[in-house]
Image 1 (cartoon, rainbow, N blue to C red):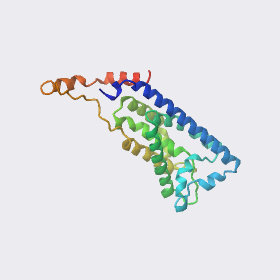
Image 2: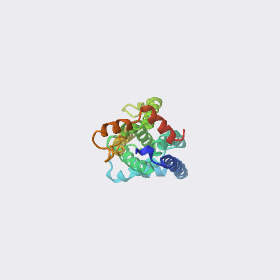
Image 3: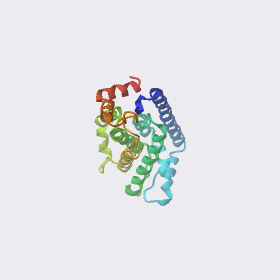
Image 4: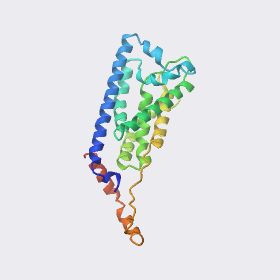
Length: 237
């Protein structure tokens, strides 16, 4: 019996997607509340908790910088992509998503700390956005998951233009280091957090071992069309 043949798989997937929605929505609400406090305090939070490259005392700010934004416009520009990519990264497992977020936070912050200009303070959730994008694009390939592969293909085609701000030479005021570091973390996360479970090849039963084994294994291999229909059914389409 494969993973998607088990009773209750559809209900578990829907429950996990619902949990992912509330996690991402709650995270966005927290970002807007933090920005309200930052705005009321004259952006003191940005100055005190943003990443300052090459300063050893500011290494803990890796974990606070993604929560801060320099303006309401900055936060608004990140909110939409963060919700879309964050939900797609989380809907198959919130625990795995939290580990992914930790990994992206570290790789993005480290890239800024090592390669960023020493006189700048870097904040913003865009490193997470690029990390989630990289994860969503490649997760399906590493997991050999048909629906996730199709989602990744659509996201790659739709948002490939975003990569222009993840390379050196990005417009002034945009941290390509945070974007590139986040993207690397997302790609690494897609590999490190891949599904290592057994794939759908059924073994012959003990009673039917021997000559019957090749026939059982061959007939149990689902067609690509059956995989797609099953995945769509699990997702509620």
